[in-house]
Image 1: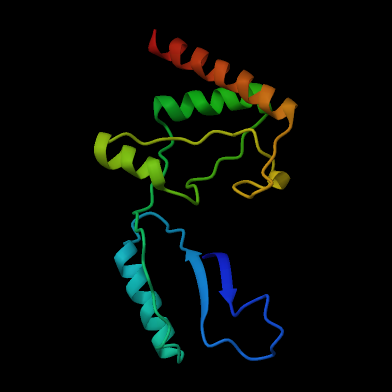
Image 2: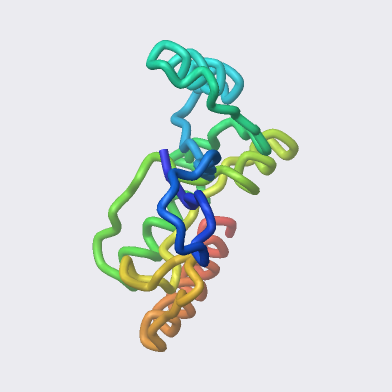
Length: 156
């Protein structure tokens, strides 16, 4: 569970009252085969059991998770290219987000991979101050070229 925003009361007010309303924006990162509707149902049940029945859930988007598949030509080429540019890669079986990867899986029947990008852990990914380092960008260019070479090599 990721809590991405919290809001309550009026920050410009000098009164010391407890706000009547509070809001939170959360997103839940699912694992393979978790049904998003079932997860929302379980969250509602959990809130009710623990005395938070008055909490309203406004569900905006639900996506099934998009697990990656190792052993495909794309995954193998990605691992080879990553090892050549970055050193031995760390492989995560699933990314925290689904988005376009799930659409690719559902519509095209194609699994995807998400290779290393140009951001470091401290780069503020998706934050207002997101930033990158030129050397990381150049490494990613080298990686992209190597991946294309690997895919061509495997296709011939």
